[in-house]
Picture 1: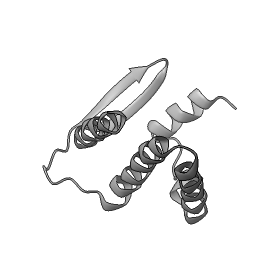
Picture 2 (picture 1 turned 180 degrees about the vertical axis):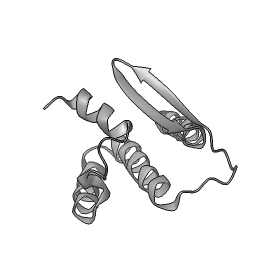
Picture 3 (picture 1 turned 90 degrees about the vertical axis):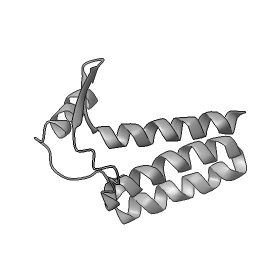
Picture 4 (picture 1 turned 120 degrees about the horizontal axis):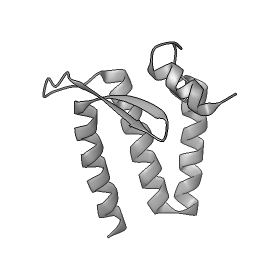
Length: 103
């Protein structure tokens, strides 16, 4: 029942599988929320939409055009994150895009 403990177990490979947001029902639910955001706040629509769909894109395509295979382990606030350096590069470009949305 501890979110931090569950997260760290998943990152360390003790829990296998994907959460519901990676399956059809989750994709439909999140898409509906993102569509509702369009009518509520277009800036948040773009931010959440870019983040969610780029995440799914990276998960399902395994795209790594620069052939960067190294991974980094980040430990913050008692939580562990193992991330591919190529994903960090993509995150930087997405952050730049989000900042440009606010201008």
